[in-house]
Length: 144
Image (cartoon, rainbow, N blue to C red; front, side, top):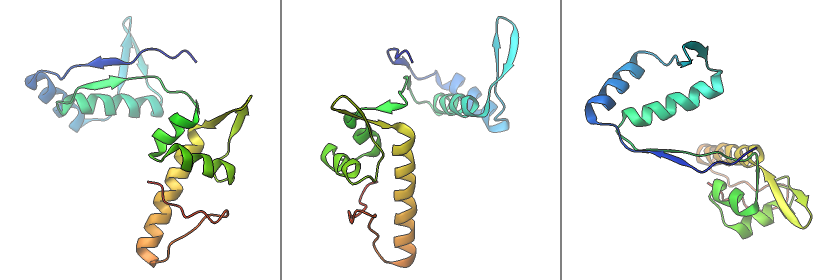
């Protein structure tokens, strides 16, 4: 995957943002025209494009960037909202799967996102049932 520099777009003028917001409130269907040919976007791309357009319609500036499917420990910790040392503990305990490239750890973005979903589910269970939970390694699950 080629990583390209992020691209930013300034806020739209209020009248343009309002028109876009109204158009999106009536439909979430996105069709892209390239050289006069209509292309219906797959669901994943459509969700990303609608989110981008919604942010512009809300008057926000946006930035588009590429992301890698495999992350360094620093990137994975940032995505998860945890410290690097806690992330390393999670990989050492086997809570987060890790691949080694030489001596460097690499973590799949999908595994970090799955761990985050599990954390949200555990928090919801604690709020519902009132008992804190630990993972198989005995680490208290304290992520986001």
